Length: 459
Ligand code: NDP
Image 1 (spheres, rainbow, N blue to C red):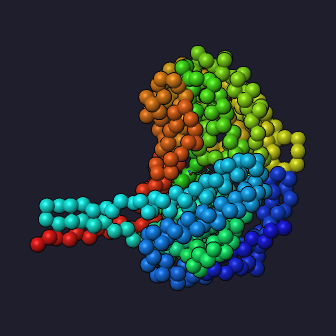
Image 2: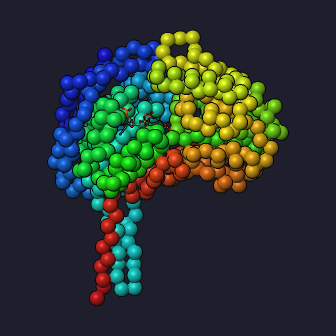
Image 3: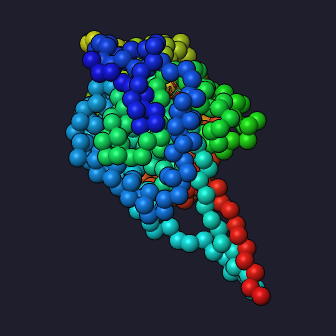
């Protein structure tokens, strides 16, 4: 069994109370983790480290990011093994998506920092110099679906811009955050620059959000938790970045190239057991190709390899949506049951015959459950895609009209003839109840810094 510890001021420690971390694959206990309630010592440590860390040049901090990336890369098999153990996802997914992207996040922001252009604005008689100062101590809170991938997406730019960090991973998946803490200690990252505390969201998470000396909160998680985070942080005028839930549509137009569309839409539906905020859980298919699409899609779903969902509790939530779908009149075309094995395994489930306004088709399920709907015009498809409180992502599949339709999807990110293809320089984030703010490239730099203008007059 693994003992996960907090990293505070360069030292590892536990707490009197602890929590257990269970494997989603078979329910066994795999780790004990601290149940942290107070973050005062972490804030002290971050405060002590801030002066010297923020005094380093951008290039020096970029070098640190590369050192972290190199150290993680040298142990990427171990990183992937821990992520697969903690989340239940197939090892190849943990290696090729989670580990790869966690390393890339550090590498990307190192390069991005080194190549950031100077921001100067000339006037006829003066020059404006935009200087980016660190915000100070920042709080980073992340969910369980892509544990280190999402946490490192916040840690890398926060470090680059000279902030000191108090990070809290999900208590359900703490292993790779602990692994990162060990790696950073091994390579000698200065004590107090990165503090990682473990525990429950309403306890240690709330302590981070409400602490007056933490000046920015970057939060990724569910919309209802995000609402609570905003209610606590906003009156304190903290900088706030919220990456929240989604209910995304994959729109298949009548001229879609089914050879790329079928595998693409199946991947968007079920990668990571549908537990990616960007997953397309509502598949909209033009009536002209619906009959051809369905058997091809179901065959590809049957061949797609998925792991369990994250926990027994989450499995119960997902199964309750399958029951709801039946009550709402849905026809189960595939799956619909628990798999016949220990742990939180649910078959990939495809449901037809529901109104796009049904609860099953409107609420975020965050599991391997997809509803499929027929449409006859672009207008109808867009109504079905946009009739939700969320606005995170979407995809359009068409040989000729993808761009035209994509522009009318109400969400922060839309793919055409692909899904989850990412350039890390572009804005990432949602509209409506899917979030506030953007991360990625210059958007992350902007969030993790205070832009100060100095206007120097030429006499
Ligand atoms: P939660 O909102 O339950 O939790 C997210 C994080 O917040 C966890 O670390 C959690 O801790 C913590 N937390 C919980 N309550 C509080 C609180 N009161 N104050 C501060 N922190 C708190 O989300 P899940 O972990 O269940 O993740 C799934 C959700 O995340 C889905 O809705 C998904 O769409 C969304 N998501 C959004 C993404 C995006 O980029 N837009 C990307 C990935 C996921 P603990 O685990 O201990 O409860």
